[in-house]
Structures are given as C-alpha cells and as structure tokens.
Amino acid sequence: MTGLENLWELGLFVLAMLLAGVIAGFVAGLLGVGGGIVLVPVLFYILGAIGATEEYRMHIAVGTSLTRCATSPAVQGGEG
Image 1 (cartoon, rainbow, N blue to C red):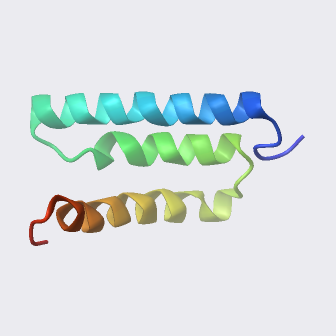
Image 2: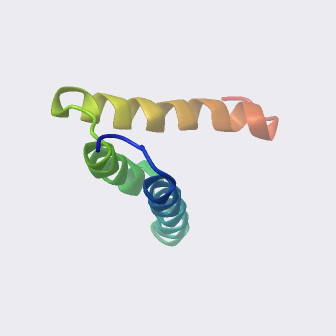
C-alpha cells in the first residue's frame, strides 16, 4: 500500500494537517514568528509518510509554505 490509497490514511493526513495548522497559528501568535517554523518540518515528515521521495520532500515543504505566504495577502485583500 503506497500513498493515500484508502480513506483512513486520507483522514489521518487531514487531521495531521489541521493539527499542524493549529499549532503553527498558536506558535505564530505566541512568539511572533511565522507559521512556517512549524509547518515546514511537519510537511516534511507527512510527505515522507505518504510516500514522497526524500529527494523532493524538503523542496515541496518549503515551496508549499512559500506559496501559502505569497497567496495569503491576496486572499485577505491586502498587498504582498
């Protein structure tokens, strides 16, 4: 079994991402740092758990975090 072949794995993936988002938001609010300090390592390990190759895991995690940072102002109606 590789990747997200069944609903159970998908549910765990969604739950892990939601928990990571809550923790990242808490840390960002408490310490005044960006949420990427939590999300990048979490994404790195979650990507490994779902079968992404080690060669690309960090690139995908950092790229996802940067995309989130770049699109947040546009969604909120502000300027980046």
